[in-house]
Image 1 (tube, rainbow over the protein chains, first blue to last red):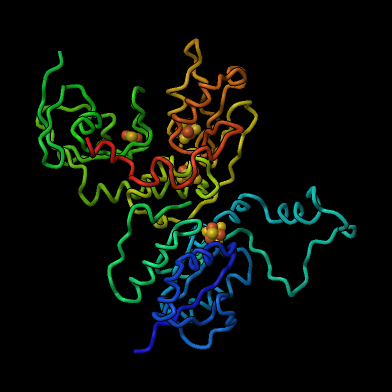
Image 2: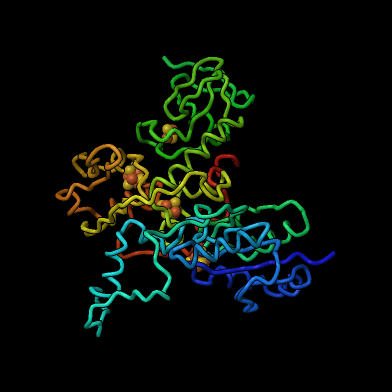
Length: 182
Length: 232
Ligand code: SF4
Ligand code: SF4
Ligand code: SF4
Ligand code: FES
């Protein structure tokens, strides 16, 4: 039987959730025995080269590119998992959600105390740059998400146990200390 | 005159004194019924509904319902658990709860209930309301994003003359907690700390202090809320 294929991505996240995945320590050796990795920042494969079984999503959607990547993952992965608070509820980036987007951009590029040298008062608008969304969206409000692993980041043990349970079809036990929102 | 009554909670026979609230009888018998707006020593309010149980088949709040002879109380059936889960999820989406950035994380009763009831994600869409943080008081920060409007601060915190320090302000879905600016100005350190402790969530925080207790070693990090009662 061929190995299940896993893809991962970081949308509006800080890469902490990917770091937590690496925090499974030497079990990473077991993991590469168990699964094959496709598109992921871990191996730097930039485009899907085949259909995947499991997609791990870190971060919510704050711009048009995030939405594009997330939809691409939905099309190419049988199971999608929101990993971490940012994917689940927007996380810290979503603290801007109550503030109008114009105000955010003006604070960042025109009025903020650290803004220097922007004498032409430009808010970046090159067509190459992904467009910021009106607010940060949790992933499951953009596409269907099959499972959620809370935490900031989710404990390495939680990510490991969830992956193993999914791959081997065994029951996922959730010890109390492992599911935390912080 | 109070007298002894017999009731059952989930089939377990419990002795109680007439007039006692269900929540207290359960506690004395090692049975945990979740609470949020209720606070020991303060008159119950019955506003959050998390303590809902079925009394002879009818949904009632355990913190405001006194026991009477032969009451049959159901604290565990599926629809009760489902209702409680829905309340917890609604409280999460109704405000802005960024737990990773909250000083109360690990000591927060709302979060602890979400852990106890295994909430991975609320089923309702997040509302991301626009709410303010008020840091005018010299001792306390009030973060309306996290307030669940339980009124525990209003009911439990008084100054030396017995005057409430906290009050409701505005109406409907705009309602918020405010600190009386005059009385609040002279808030003692003890009272500020008491207010923070009374608040079930991270809406009232003592200023210039944080992370004394590391994440991972806080009250509900290792054991679910209610385990102290169940261990009795
Ligand atoms: S959940 Fe936490 S660790 Fe993961 S991407 Fe968001 S901020 Fe980083
Ligand atoms: S008040 Fe509780 S639930 Fe809300 S952010 Fe703080 S820890 Fe999380
Ligand atoms: S500030 Fe805290 S104690 Fe007061 S109503 Fe809000 S949540 Fe309850
Ligand atoms: S604890 Fe009973 S209604 Fe809130």
